[in-house]
Amino acid sequence: MMKIQLHKPYELPQSWEELPLERLPMVVEMAFLRKTGASAYHDLFRAVLGIPEKEYRKVMNRYFGRHVSAATREKNAEELHSLLLAVRWIWETDLTRRPFEYIEAEGQKWLLPEQGFKTMSWGELSDAFVHSKAYAEQLEAGETRLHLLIATLCRPARKTRGDLWNGDEREPYNEHFVKTRLAGVEKLPAATKAAIYLWFVGTMNEVFGAYELFGDGPAQEEDYPGQSFVRNTFTLAEKGIFGSVPQTRTANLHEVFLFLEENNKRERRKESAQEEANNYAAN
Image 1 (tube, rainbow, N blue to C red):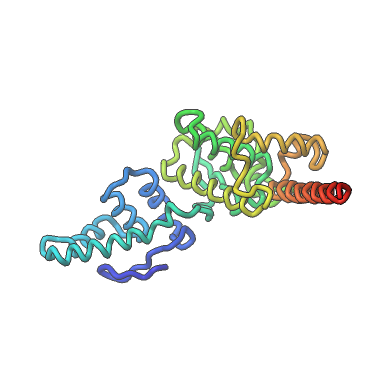
Image 2 (image 1 turned 30 degrees about the vertical axis):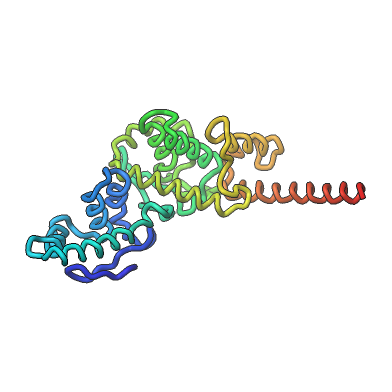
């Protein structure tokens, strides 16, 4: 936290992790859903600090009111500008901390995935990636894909755990239920939707970055969003690594990534050994 002094001492968060969770929806709304401009930056700044609007106006009047000399106002403006620059992390860093545990929709609590997608299935990530990519590129105009993404991620708590419980408190993922929940998602506040989207994308980047397999992320040149996921799903099923296609989709995404990464390393070692053998034979 950066300690600053206005009319009283404040702690200015320097990352998503330092930002109190109760302020996150407002910060997301001000940073990503409002038009840019001087007033928008002021609204964002007070949202990050958690200052009520009425109190913030009094603070600004203290530093920029008519009773303040022009020279002092200019000096105060420079100091305020430097403070506004101190919240650039909002746009420059990924949101990887779960913004809330659940959303309330259709009279129920729908849980978000665990931090770091620890218990998420391969099939769920595949579908969520496709929806997020299609929404970002507006392959389908409007927010339909955003709503499909949220309905994919957020689900009611499972009623029973059973002997095969994988640690996920949400009910098992079933893509056929997703469209039936769109009405509930559509009614969510815009800031809530935006927070979930930012968190998913930020965590997805974090997960991909943990594996050498992806380098800078999944394949950039695809005929359609998620093609690499589909290709890997059928390849794994064909080899019977995790079972059939439906069984592969229920496998833990981290287990799939680990297998793909180790298999990729194995193939590279084979290619390197073969290349060395060919060079030796040629000489």
